[in-house]
Image (cartoon, rainbow, N blue to C red; front, side, top):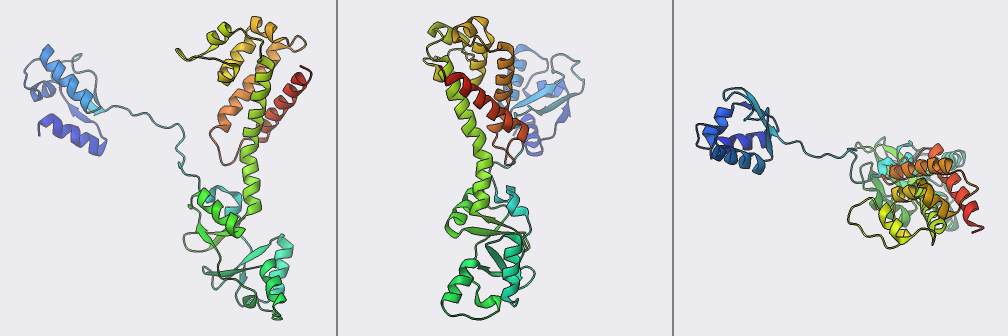
Length: 322
């Protein structure tokens, strides 16, 4: 292994730059001067190993100190976990009421009524879940003649327990099959109960903006239908070489370009609508759409949600009479 290869390997392993001189680079490729042949070999070495030097080895004195370092790599702007986890949900982080295996039934019933719960985890110790009790288990036991006032006689043991880092979609399948799951800390302490109602509420938060945006886009397409010449449609396309064959092929940004153009605005025929106000409102929607597509577990803020609804309602008024 040559000196340069060893150096490149060390830099890759440590991701740390190294101080060298241009003379070192030139000598490593078998030359004494920075001749064209030496420069070609050095440049190929740097390219093949994703390395760069700063300052450039040809622009300084041959014995000056330069830095050999990895080329910067493109990074995600957001460093979030690529997998959505059950711990993202509020319900998974809301400590639940629990009962002990030795508690009386009255306590369980009172806790469920006070908190509007359908079930409670049953504990066999601070960090040991041994089952659950619910209105269903109580009703089933009573129908079989159980007349006890102890939680243990109404308990079911087949409770589904998952940690916060459980993939969301896996947890949802279990919730669908079992009505709920208990979420626990690493030490086994319950930290939340997630029910089908919690999942439904969360998915409404997530999906409502997508549904409204789809409605807005369909309404925009209806406004533009047979109003714009095909040659103008192609001109507004922002991606060079991309063919646009119908209104449906445009992006939100390209819709906005059409609205911003006075000639196209006149063709659309919204004579009683102020173009600048419409364009500003549409631009707000476009920016909100970019946030929605990131699928943030907390959803968009209420102000953004209301802007989407307002735009959808406004477009509905414009399209209903067309």
